[in-house]
Image 1 (tube, rainbow, N blue to C red):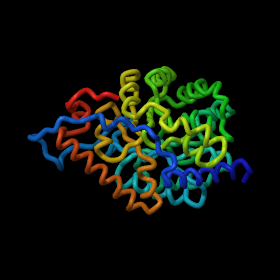
Image 2: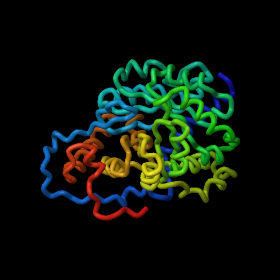
Image 3: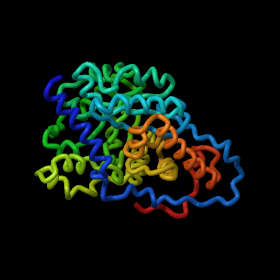
Image 4: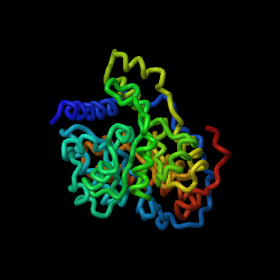
Length: 347
């Protein structure tokens, strides 16, 4: 394995350690608390018959949850990915893997192989690469290989300029990234998702991406993990930590990002992630326009424990979401998306 690949793998393990230690928590909130539903004291529905299914990229999904991208070095990645795939299959949720760059450049490994598809034959699985790599030599072939490697249904390209700008070894020349996204979107119509990584998407960027042919967006707003702070924590006492410090509250909060993206690009499927704590936050995100709701840090401890822990975690979120539907008189998620609010949320 090359020195560069070794460094990438070490960095993935360091990321998990810093996330678990709470060193990357954004100093702003997701804004979702501002979304307050009108309580329906007389719901004319059956709690147990509430339909929590959704549609994403034209496909029915049993629960509106995305296990968002996470990974680690080889000591953890294989077990984490296997558990997440098994949980996705058990519950009928969507699974997004962590970045596949190392796996591509070392011909596999890190639990990113067809074993994932064998463990989750019916689940929707999303491949994942950094968008900046498509300005640095990656093309349609690498996108195809990433999907084929795990039997993925679609591909995520992630945007992380704050992280790359803070990371000492980060990629800072982003000229050509937009053109790279456009080429991949044209090659895989209806199968490309673009996501931020914790700083949110603005309405203007959402519109640009829609015009490039992207099929869905994951807003990954501010209020959860701040990857600038994570990279600063990796360099404790160094320049990167000082560089990141003023950006602790940087980004578009999740709630505002969802609202702005839904308005700017109503034709796109939206994923709400960034500071999602529970099923009530999931309900709030759906009310703002999300069709899927993602968690990464929130499910990490369960993923390090075992498949059953991941299933239990997501099952509780589903029960909380169902309760929100019941107490708003919403028989399904389409009704929840129109449920009345106490007042217009101010973000």
